[in-house]
Amino acid sequence: MEINRDLVRWLILIALLPIGWPFVKALWKDFNGALREEGGLFGAPPSAREVDQIRAEKKHEPETLVSEPWVRPGEVRKPRLRGRSDRPAPGTGNRPSGGPRRFR
Image (cartoon, rainbow, N blue to C red; front, side, top):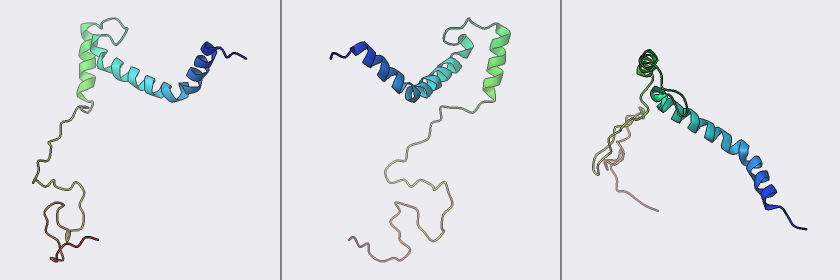
């Protein structure tokens, strides 16, 4: 019995569609939103009034590309959450007990 390869390919594609569809949908929304001022992926260019409206809407949206500084060797990053005050900052080498470090 010979199996039709095209039929198997279509069945695999249909079976994997629920997994891939949310990913494709998110990409579509992201690309279309990024190109909104130019008319989107396949749309017509907006008028000057619509471009001004789009830019006004973008002012209220949070910035998506955020640059955070790297921690250089020897520097200690301040903790974001407040922990116990008797603990030293990570990487300082100071221990509350003051005793030597023991490894098992």
